[in-house]
Image 1 (cartoon, helix red, strand yellow):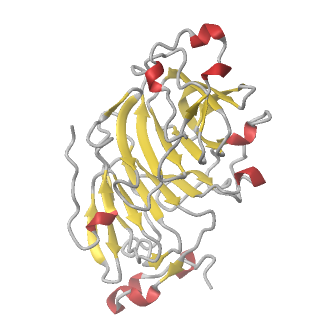
Image 2 (image 1 turned 120 degrees about the vertical axis):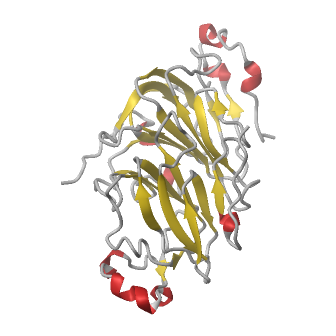
Image 3 (image 1 turned 90 degrees about the vertical axis):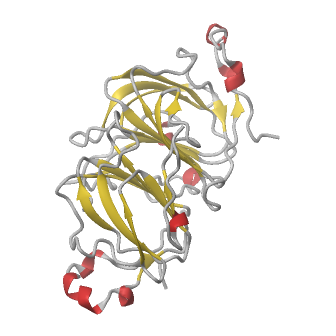
Amino acid sequence: MADKRIEPGKYGYMIQYANGKDGNLEHDLGHYVQVLDCDQFPSANFYTAHWTAAENHYQDADVGHPPHEHKEFELIFLIGTDPEHPFDLGAKLDFSLGKEMEHHTLDKTCCLCMPGGLIHGSFIPREVNRPYILFRIHQAQHMSEYPHQELLPEEIRAKITHPELWQPVNWD
Amino acid sequence: MLIPKIIEPGKYGTSVQIANGNNGEAEAYSGPWIQVINKEIIRDPKYSGINHYELHWNLPGRNFPDPEIGKPPHEHQEDEFIFLFGADYDHPQELNATVEICLGEELEKHTISHPCCICIPAGTIHGFYRIIETRKPWLTLRARQSNMLTEHFRMDLIPEEMKEKYIHKECWKDINWD
């Protein structure tokens, strides 16, 4: 666990130092950089940044993050980390959009922009030639999520061995 | 020379915005633009609720036009969150840079040399935002929690002795501010 640095001064609370996710520095896909939400700063939306590396993968690597939707707008920046080639992601991912699960291959630095209610996923890192940064934003103070694993073909659904990871969050 | 925009095909292709700098513009002051996202760039009513986001590199040897001033004091009508993070996978908790920012009307000075988010409530004056040193490339992601960008510079807060260092006045203009 990493200690959180505290910035002194009347306005020091406005500088929130990164310490992963409440001190936990390891995400399934790579190192955490920072998770910031309204528990740390009252008006903040939900922001999370972590690395993705070749040696890391989701617990069910062939499934990735299965199809789901949010009530709020979500953005995912996939950021290549070679400043000489800023638009090269250095990795390849499979990503699906809509109920039709329209397939997209991602290999460039990009931002995935999902209005609330748009089903997206599975999100599956396939190749990582150079670690990249994933910066995810939910335009709400509390993120919500509703899984749609019923959209997956039966043979893929059978590979979900950690269903506890993909449960509704803040969804009535 | 603008960077061409690559359009992702498909019914849902709009949701995959491939980076092309700041709407085609390649260079920010302190390093290459990676991407700017807002409702002006995604011109589709289904995406009109998207906030404004800016992402760019900061490279050694690069800086603001007036490095001793940086970005002068200013305020916004919306909350702003400025994430500063390093790009060295082996040392994810290193920024590899030192920046300075002054906060509040008192211009309380803060020196930052670790990854963080500077959280600026609407109406709070901030700047001079200066890059003191960049040892290795690092990244800035600026999120404005509104789909309408505003900015108002407070040049009245620049002390007399600094005014002669403030040369590139054309760089800092009010945006959507009556």
